[in-house]
Image 1 (tube, rainbow, N blue to C red):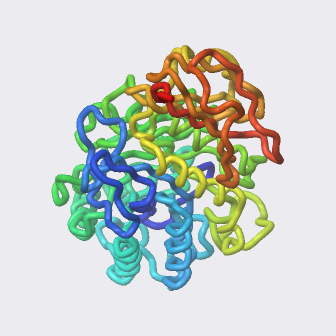
Image 2 (image 1 turned 135 degrees about the vertical axis):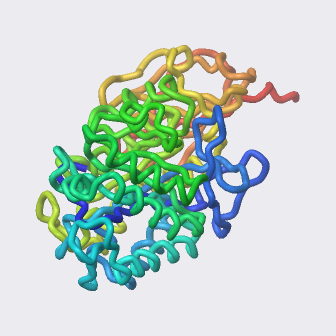
Image 3 (image 1 turned 30 degrees about the horizontal axis):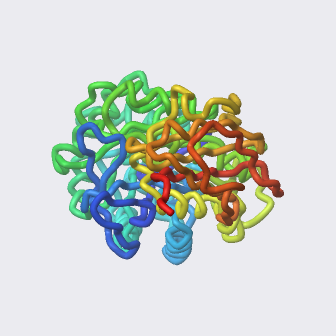
Length: 446
């Protein structure tokens, strides 16, 4: 996340709603609760308690626990849930009074001493997690955020001073306190590849002692996937990608590294370092069409709310809730929720998308279901592509264009058409990117 310090022990890393998932046996309703999530061997996506494929569609809110009152946190969580988001990434060093929360409560009775958790502080954490549970949200929760760079912006030094025995006891404390909620997925580390893995391992293993069925992942330094750094750790059950480089390049290599679900943990944020709604859309679609179980989106100033950010904010966080990028993420959620996204396989051999792949960030992405009935192509730059629909199952193909900024759709010219090689030119508009959705079926008898 780039020089952001988590000034408290708890960094809520992701909150996920039931909406945005699809089920192989029935379509789940958004009012149901998906937890506990689970990992099934050989599946690259997460599953909910009903066995439905669970699509993460996330937002980044690092400073929520530090900067927001309960009323403000409730406003934020309800807004994101209503917009189809399913993940919020949170820490607190950029809060106005870190490591204290909005009420002035600090996480430890003795600052930085992991053996002295402050009951008043953790009662506020209790409230947030229970509110998330009541809204049907799954929470990815970091028990001790390390800190970007060399770890001096988080809890690295305090963890080293506390030692592994104390950290294991702290892991048991949080695992026992929150494991029974059912909606927690633990996120170890934080923005740093800690050379002394024992400190992070102690917390993770302590959690496993009191919550043996807990799902855990890790947030490493940029350009380091969780499985790259924590291979063979028994507590690691979910992989993720963290990159500021082209997302597809990082995401496509992960399935070969291990059989576990993975998602895009972090990439460029809207309104930061030149990234706009178009950039964050590219990241999201590239991630999902590369085979992930979802992605996290970020926005400046939402990630730091009222606290200091990396640059001055041009608008209040309440106004930014309705940013173009956020509206695009609702379209993404609605689009993938309408199809069997969990059956899509990336077109890595370019035998379906035969021309117009593009490169670097502007890489055109295509994926097909294993039965050949559905294909999805994301075109990031307004340039045409050539497809070979004969690689699909049927002799006839129906196709539609979907605007990823608004959700508006229109039939592709000539649809339905025979399954032969053809060129597709996207519609014109005030944005560059488009989604092409194709359905294959037998020729209809007259």
